[in-house]
Amino acid sequence: NKAACYDKEGRVEDSMGECNKALDLKPGNVKALFRRGKAYLALNQLDEAMADMRQLLTIEPGSQAAQQQVQLIKGRQRQQDNKDKAVFSKMFSKAPPPKKAPPAGGGSEGAGA
Image (cartoon, rainbow, N blue to C red):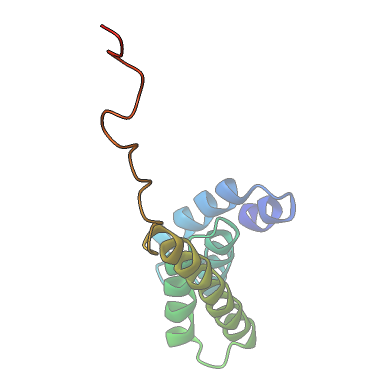
C-alpha cells in the first residue's frame, strides 16, 4: 500500500493523496481513513483528523487505534485552545495609559524675539 510506505517515509502529503484516492474508490475504507486522519494530525489539521477518526469509529466502533488517536487529537486541541487563549488575552488586555504630552509653551521657542 503506497500510503503506508509514504507514511513510513514521512511523506505526509503523498500519503494523504493515496488515502484520498482509496477513499474515492471505497468511501468506508478504514485503513485509508485511519492513515489520512493521522496525516491530518501530523499537519495539525485537527478538525479534519477528528472527522476521519469519528467516521472510522462509526464503521468500527471497537477500534482501539482510532480511539487512541481521538484522545491524542483531543489533547492537541486542548493545547491549541490554551495557546489561543494566551495570545488573545495578551491582545485584549488593558493597554498602559498613554504618556502625557509635555505642557504647551514650556519650551524656549520664541524667547527674546
